[in-house]
Length: 120
Image (cartoon, rainbow, N blue to C red; front, side, top):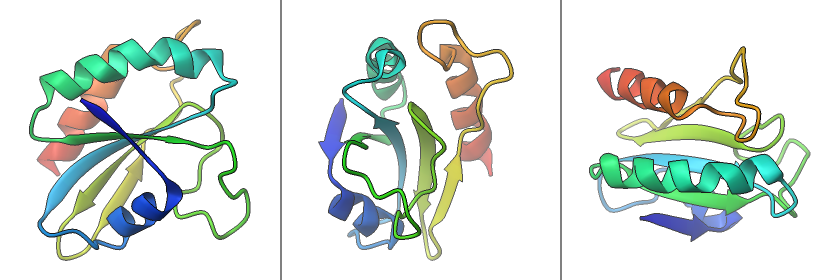
């Protein structure tokens, strides 16, 4: 299940203001982005496959473009992993060398990212 969050919730995740350690995936999207809309089913599938990871989505319409943004993104969709431990670590998935023509990210590319980051 993917939960929609706002900017305040994102900041709380990054600041580690949660009750316990957690691993979270966050998808940044826009309602005006066809890639984002097409990626939605794959992201939902991932949330079901990785039950031990919390999946979130945040609408960047209105997201600050200046230095106050808690995660620097180059555009949408963007996916990142937030590992909340003693020290929180945010890792942004790099843009694919060969983007999917309709979704930007290939499902396998996101899976490889998740599997690699979980092992770190």
